Image 1: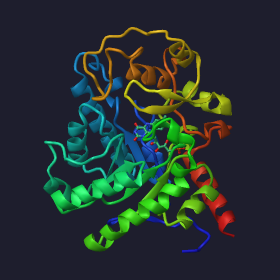
Image 2: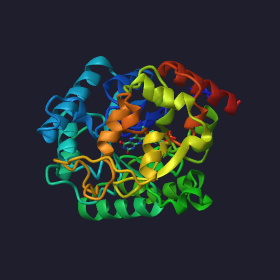
Image 3: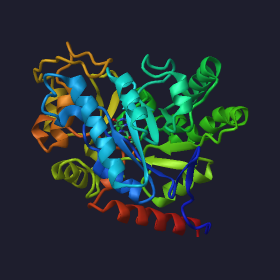
Image 4: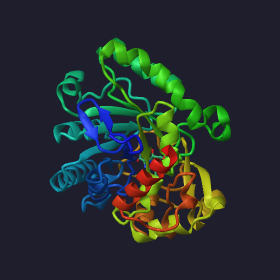
Length: 365
Ligand SMILES: Cc1cc2nc3c(=O)[nH]c(=O)nc-3n(C[C@H](O)[C@H](O)[C@H](O)COP(=O)(O)O)c2cc1C
């Protein structure tokens, strides 16, 4: 391999031609369409599972079944259409995260990325033997070196097994964030400070389990030069989401993508999500109304997120995110990373990967 080229990313026996993982995006922003395109381009394509049943006809009467069917279908469509690597993103906070894990393993996805919480005790439906004997790799998304240490210690002690890779997600990411609002601007928690600390936490387990356990950097990575910066620090890959929203293949409505193209730096804001975590999103009339104290009444018959305080929440976050994804922007809002204001137009996924590869080469050269 030429040293100017993006290096491959190896996780266990699976190899991605380029070290780029498309971050999972919930409520149908990253489905089989985007995941397949990224996998075809040599990266790892991820299907977001949160609210994946929202397009099913029975979503209001039987949310659990709708979600299961939606996930199974998207995995199968992606699989049928690409020979590349496909994973899913499951948020720990999902009420049905057990079922989502079980289906993903049964469907034989290449990776399960687990976000929004620390996966310690395995769900009832998934035993450690299922994980050991399956080809599916488990990759937690964690925002602190301490979290990595706690998880690896726990898994090592109780399962004598450790995850296959780790994504360290810094404070510039889009969506729910694993930081308090005060931590977001504190340089101590900047991604460039977290990556070396996470590598240090993971190192002893690499030897003990004879596993490579690559560390993957995420949050605010925008150019090929950014990719080089994190690879130089010892990360072996990057996870990017914001840039993949601005692609033709992204599964969200064109109006959702246009918000990214139109937004300015000052439109990117931090909200307090009903889920109990801060989140980064694009400011719009909906969020302005919420911040003025307006309530958008709703009834909740499922409680899709275990941590959602739906009785006091002024709006339903799942409904708001689905509405925005479908282009009904007056009824919801879009999550976005801190660099979304840099998006100027739509690309195809292949064009985007080619641009990142060229920028990487230039930075190396
Ligand atoms: C629209 C959107 C939806 C997201 N949804 C999820 C999600 O469901 N689960 C999750 O773990 N991360 C989610 N994220 C975070 C991304 O997967 C990713 O790690 C992060 O945004 C990377 O930073 P970047 O957007 O600056 O590249 C979301 C991000 C965006 C922009």
